[in-house]
Length: 226
Ligand SMILES: *Cc1c(COP(=O)(O)O)cnc(C)c1O
Image (cartoon, rainbow, N blue to C red; front, side, top):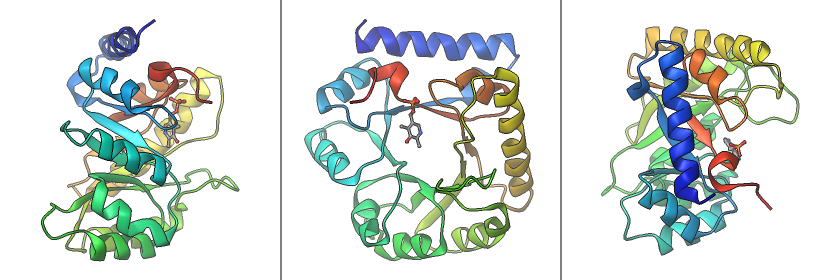
């Protein structure tokens, strides 16, 4: 199967899930997660109509961003962030979805170049307090949202989460629904939050059912990672 075929399959799957559950398919953004895959794979997905790409490893991402500089791609950083790398992220990405502490917000806002619009931010939440998983805990969220919404070069967009892995559909839905409730609560105070980034290759349907507005798909588009 070519990447174009896989893009078409995922689009059809999203459309089918939305139709089945009476959800407006235009609400869902497909983010292609291209980490570990080469620029020509990104080019192929772009040619098949994908415009937003997610990367997790900074050095590798910067090379691809440079190589594909001629394409109007929206780049999302979705990986763990070391605070000494925020400048390169602020200079090269349109979105950062893995922000989980105040220091990162302060640095990204400070280091965002003046000629660029504010950088779009999702707070990554470790909703189920999993050890060794990145993300802010629920009791840290209010402070982070307050700061994110007040910094000049930050545009607060939403939440990103990766819940505990399970193959059980109903359990996936239940977990995602809890995250969605948290998101809806946040929206009461910050109505500018329009993005709930949940759902990957293995739990896309459950995430959409539970209220996702952005699915982050890697393996199903590009194949297994090495
Ligand atoms: C790798 C990654 C994905 C994509 O996962 P797949 O299971 O390959 O679809 C999504 N989100 C984040 C944060 C990732 O690191």
